[in-house]
Image (cartoon, rainbow, N blue to C red):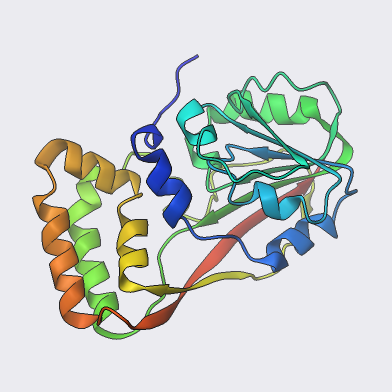
Length: 244
């Protein structure tokens, strides 16, 4: 089957600049499930996979893009596999946790629901995790807002699910309460700019218009954020949990 591949061309950059999920998220997942086997669905380059391995005996991390898997973060308890979310190839009733982090909006949703219901054990936790806008103070936030206006036409249509907090991605099992968790990072300006250039809308902008708009954005950020200064960024996480 085909899939919307927005990141293979920037896989190395994605692995370098995507933020890491907080330990509080891993604890929230592990505390609500058995901790034998976790399935990280649409794992990208393993940002969540390796953290899950701190609490789970075995982590199976799948992604349909081999280029992403070629840039993974290795861990002895993480097994990476190139397969789509809708056709994982995993055995029936084989995982205690099925989690999709910043990935569920790309799935063929009806087919994914069937597949995750097949692979998750009765009583397993099924979790969707997403993050959208960055919370950062001052003139940097103003420049970020300005850039978002420029790239707005380039977001894939699936981005609407991120913006509306996954409200339309319905899991047909009983909901489980999820805590309020923020993801934070203490970054330099260049780290933030690297992250912005992993956005699917930025990738499409560069494909259509070349790098001039991105270079202009970087110059505007440089005017309001000194080279050697670090700042704390915050992303409120959207969490949707259900019990199989």
